[in-house]
Image (cartoon, rainbow, N blue to C red; front, side, top):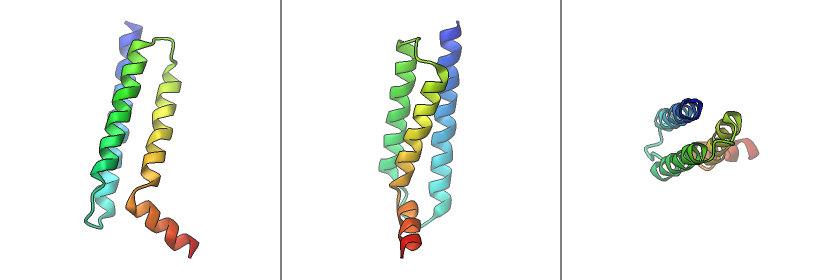
Length: 90
């Protein structure tokens, strides 16, 4: 039972972060929605949830933390963030 609850918590966190990413990408505008980045985020989330379900010795904080870091990594390569870095540097 504990394993199922922890997997559900990780799945909820993955859905929450993915929907937040989609909302932020839509709000940034620019006309080019990052579908590829969203797909990578979804596939990474599914992978982490399945690993958490298959291997119960993975801690909940490890699964959530690894997905959060993965989401930051994916978000760094979207067009609005790269444009902001270009403006910051120049």
